[in-house]
Length: 188
Image (cartoon, rainbow, N blue to C red; front, side, top):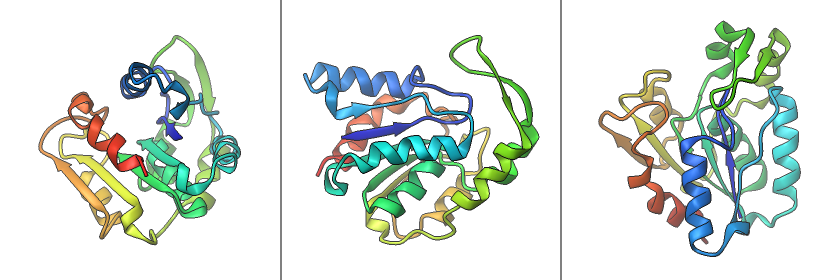
């Protein structure tokens, strides 16, 4: 199973999640892909994702995490020993998201939610300062990411498979051209 973890303010309606969902549907294997709506609370998001990870053997599980979801995917890959693809992952969200405290609007709906200081504080205990077994990781980092610094991403995943893209953007709007490579990495 591939578990996709979306980013801050995102949802299962993100471009990349919908593209992957359609891909597995076209293969007649929709059960291989799962993308839940993650709670705003990082603690609750990790608990929710952890329950899903616990239901699948590590050798049959792969994670794909985008932005904040990449931060979560890294912590979960370390915990469960599974593979993870990281798409422009957040490296220091406890610092980066502090400026987003307050009422936020979801990207794919008109829903509003409150992101508070307690949520920011929940990020620090999740932080993975160093990865083990870099062969389990595949990083895709865009130099054109307007939100996060690709150099931090590259430095955080030494020894991992890395694809650094000239241009592109934080949402990886050109993800379709990398999707099969991502799925192949996730497949045992």
